Image (tube, rainbow, N blue to C red; front, top):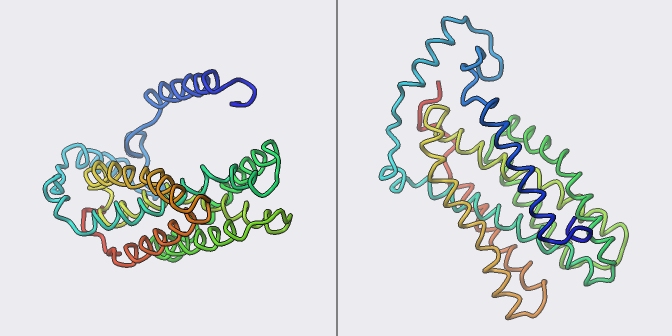
Length: 258
């Protein structure tokens, strides 16, 4: 769209699309399953129990105030740990096309590779969801970080080799479908259903700030090393730090789950 319509027109088109979805969401998306007579995961409970749950949630006041959360170790571990994984994800994606063109692929082909990675993200989302449910969010997140360390090594070693490029694009795509699922899941795991929103209101903004630091990291490393190899090396270091923080996060729910 940028190539055919220009940046201004393409961005405006997506603005209209997002506004349409926002209006749709306002009228049709509910805050809880109970609001439409259901229960999480479609567990079979009576309508009386559903109403009791809804009344309890409507009157629930979370003990996790902003002051308490700022003193909470796990809040910082989640915000910085998963925020760093997010940082690496963004850093890889925004430089995929320049990396592919730097080794000899045309810009059109490089954009097609990015589109292929986006398609792989669909199956990636299912993969991380399965790992999360089967082995827990921390384990899935450690695997996520390890996958992107391998991906970064592949990007550093990248040549105009069809097999190497294919594997790299698949790995990039698999990661794309994971980070937003995992960070949401860990907040729910640690703080529970009832205190999710109280915790998420501060965790997500901090994680977004950490994520955005990818551009600072890229700017500094590109200025120093004059190539993407230095940036990828820095992101490997960030990924290792993120995995350590993930391992240090509790796997116990400290909020009200039910």
